Length: 508
Image 1 (cartoon, rainbow, N blue to C red):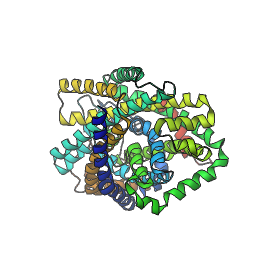
Image 2 (image 1 turned 180 degrees about the vertical axis):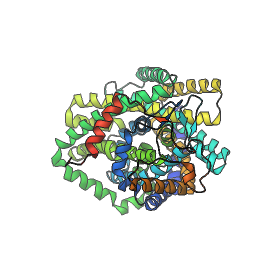
Image 3 (image 1 turned 45 degrees about the vertical axis):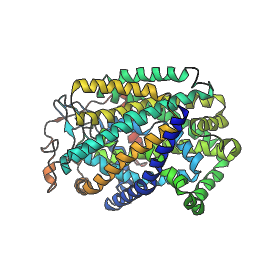
Image 4 (image 1 turned 120 degrees about the horizontal axis):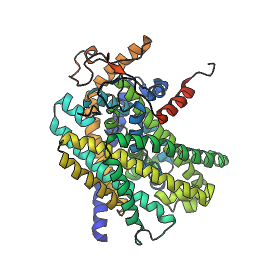
């Protein structure tokens, strides 16, 4: 059995290396730079607008089941903010060196432009379900704009393999491996099986409750766990402020060590930074648009901006939190730090700053991150499964299979899980990046429409007929005359208070 596993690890590793080294890296960089130039840096110049649109409450027609902008962002953030923010960052540092952090930061900034384009396209060509809710994503805009349903099906299958099987198996594995600190033989004493049963039961309870339960749970879990983790990282960084010059010195020195980079590019800080960054923030990958399409907003560009913000939250904020804690440990105890990888490295880093209590907090964060990510991933997979078939029995069986995958994933191989997730992610990202480069012109025209209305002092409202030549849409053909206000819940109300504090000028 171990020989078969080793063979699969080697095979998937070779495929993974070829896909990223020769195809995906080029596409990611080209797409990010191209979209940044064509949108005139939309991810930077409209940064404040991102916060303003989080708490949008209107634009819900009678008979529609509203998912607010905030809820849609939380679903996408739930998928982005997984154990990749913890284990992935630690793996990138351990395997590629501290310079991987810099390349993750850079890819997040350029990737936010790609996230804007794909999410704007998803909002534009979303479709309405019978219950009044919305769904959409790359498979939908591929079919409606390119008229290539077969390619949409290929993308949908790739996403399902990536998220329902690859990523969710990986999240379950990382959750189980977080117990290694407490139970060194967890993999053989039944603990992994117990974790699998527990996670599978929670997953079943949530996904069989439908999209409303998914959005409600993620709207609570994601903000709470993010705040706890950010506070933990801030305290760890501030209390070790004396180590920060060395931390940033290591990061930038390693990031531009070109002799080391080009001597082994496939395992360099550049490659590991891009791979782990993409795994974490998913910009351009075609996943977050599935959540963006579910929101009820007055203009597609608003969700595009919100999804750009989600990329920043994931990589520039949460991944940086993990990176700082690991790098402080890296500077203070390099002998031990360089011998560890993944979750154990993060736990050792937190133990270095806080002692045993810090490990308990991080372990709790890992469980929250993993569960919310599993739920967000399933949301994407279901939307694409429905694109392929709307058969209710098939959907029921699919949900059961997804629950089983979570259980099995808790006992999966670490290397094999990473490789499979990378391959599935790479395949869907290649398809989506090519498509959004082709269709990006429509996102640019919608951005011009948004900018013109904003400049005129209006709250931008989109009607498809305003864009000459725009391919037919299902949801944007009439003026929103029959809109009513969406009643926010307590989480949305709290978000509105925070956003007001962030966006209100000091002199007011």
